[in-house]
Image (cartoon, rainbow, N blue to C red; front, top):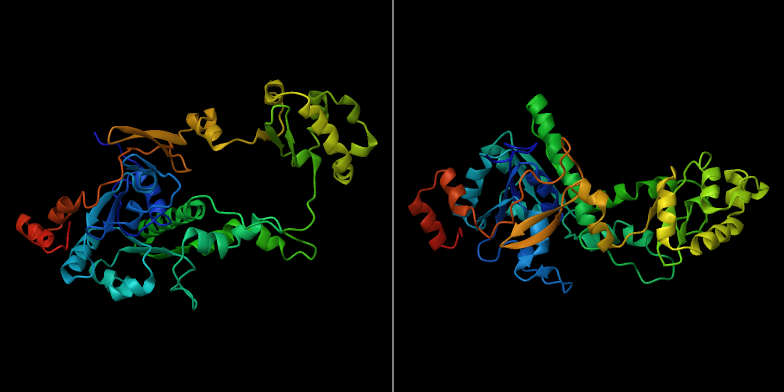
Length: 401
């Protein structure tokens, strides 16, 4: 019996490339939605063959494609032809959602705008994502993670110290942040349509995602003395300390009142509990330059293995700064199914689940590898009424693959 997810029965036709939008629909595919990835014949989604020189391939396995397109179907159609476009529209008639990352002018040229699709399916939810939003003079500009989110969206500025070379973005950091907005938008539109019968046009962008991610800085910037890159305020109980073996412990005691005494006793610094320099948080902040070296000397005198069991019994918020390798084997990550293994052509590949669990399960209801280009073309074309001869003709003319 096929496993079912919370979006079982929802059909999404996706005309999108790279990561931003496909990285959103995969969250729905993982939870049962039928996501049909529409690609051009022969070449397919450019992400299939993208070479960025950072070692994303394991033999024949393209990790980026697997992470963002698992559990999907692929149909290969030449939408620049009338017959290819008509096949897509027949598919649209059966769908709940049309999802795209293609720029607005390109969709208009293909005659795949909202009105075009609603003429064939009045209830279709029309969802789209782009770089800079869908209004304004620059709505047509191309936008990728590093340009629209990281650079234009202010993230690079926020994560770069003054005078340093601009900090490089992590792979797909903005894409996957924005992908959650894609998934949220579609889920919301499906809910609205179920409640009211009315379909929505859903729009999000890499720029809007960056603005939301930096919303605290943007709102705080209204304060007269706020400075993103001003003098760094060192607060002793919201600080990172290095152990003798080089592990870094981050404390985040937002309300230190119940934790100051227990922390001092844990560290063997009982004499500081009633020290007037550190009696309250205002005093500790004012005298952090004195307190931080005291705590650092104590923590730095022992290895992390000494501190961990003591800190495990401490009720304040702290964590060790982990590497990516640490994170991949973190017991909490494993226990909560944040990472799962998927077989791709006989190769076990570690994949990351979406960030939301349903009924205690975070991993996909099923875990199927990303489809080969056009792997489902014949089955889908047959479903929407094409005969074997008609499919063979489309293939012979290069309209389908």
